[in-house]
Image 1: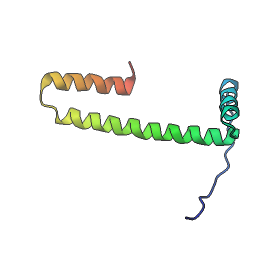
Image 2: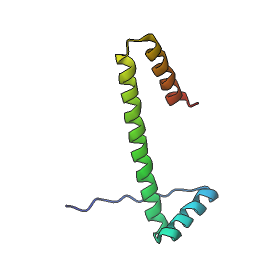
Image 3: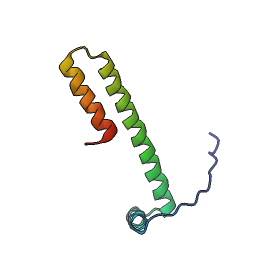
Length: 84
């Protein structure tokens, strides 16, 4: 398998986040950079899962025929989009 190309990025983190990253890196004996890469990967995966869940909910909403179920799913979609 060919090695993947890496792209250098510069980010500025708020002090609180930078300290958290440093603590994680020290605890796991990793570099700050590796921790940041893992956190970004986890965040992207979580975003994909959230998107999948939303589309599954939207499909259930479209397929629902019972008015009570439609209302319940509509409320659920509203919370999904706008939060609690």
